[in-house]
Length: 174
Image (cartoon, rainbow, N blue to C red; front, side, top):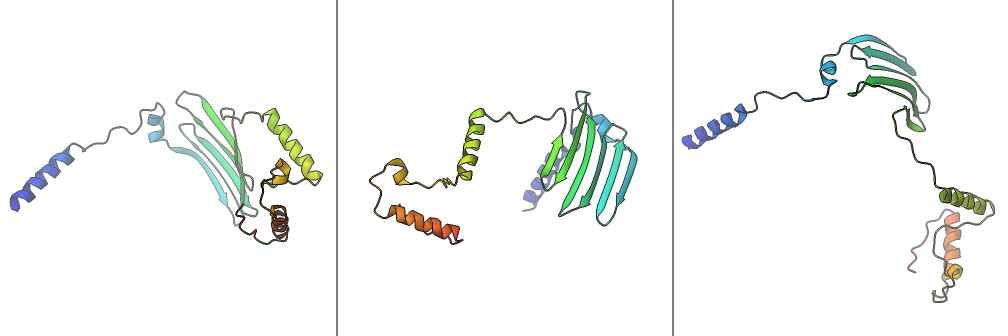
């Protein structure tokens, strides 16, 4: 038993000897500047219902934000940093009920909405204004399906009446 313990301890020691030092965590060009960057400016003011802060580091990172309590927190701010390519990247943002909304020249933008989708949305709005409601349920009469079970139309009307009155719709097996 003693031999097994000694062999296990020697094996563990030998395995751990190879992991004595950690290599540099990042080979990025900015990593050497970021590793020991000092804060050269810092200002903050925190109150019961609002806050603001700003700071700057010696490697060019700058950030600022101000916010207030308004049915949650609403804040505006921005930050900038120097990328690995040497370019300065800036982001400004607002955050609150509408979510986090960043803006920056380097951020991607959504493609334009296709014309067919815009037309369909307009048609949906016009139909709804005219009282035409399509809730997505199958209506055999709409498609000329004569093989629909008897009473299908009445069951659909009953379910819609219950739904509009706030009742849960019954299970529809058809």
